[in-house]
Length: 239
Image 1 (cartoon, rainbow, N blue to C red):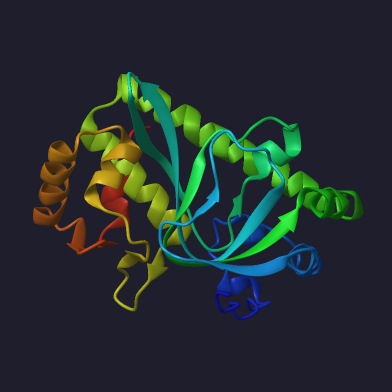
Image 2 (cartoon, helix red, strand yellow):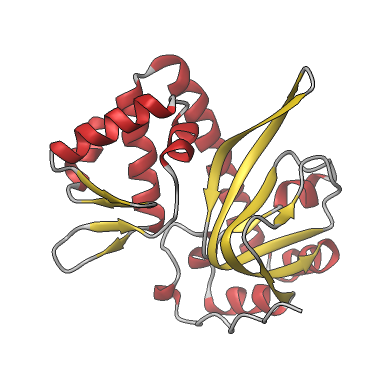
């Protein structure tokens, strides 16, 4: 059996400000986390699989989860990364809420800690905390808006603007600000995955990241990006 991760801190400030859990009140947050069971996923484990029934939702406590969609093309299955989720985010709520099959696969990148909540207990939570259910609905709308922006950007904006938008969104949602004002994105995302999120070829992604490094907007290390100038990055992304 994998080890059970420690209980998450109750302090709202310890949750990424862009996450769902950060938007809940302390009572709502405690009730949501108490509604399920702690579970740990190893690297590349699937939390949910595209096409499966929606029996569970997960609240992420730690680690990174990559959301990908597979499209059948001849005899090959191609997966494209369409989103990432991390601490404080909800996974799998679409299928639980509408009863349709899962629309994507969610895989752990490294070790991931989560709370697994059955569809029945998730529904009970929503009934007991209708204001929290409204917050979850707003979170769903935000995800749909982000998906719509991504599709529009792929058809309208250049590669540089799309890469800037992805970096800005990741920094705003998960970034950790250091003493010198740099915002570190603590997510182990490859350049290929960044490109997939932006709808940009990996060779173009590498070139644009190099330009942003030379301009002093970002700094990069293996699977880590630090934004040195959020203002400049904001000005580069699409409106």
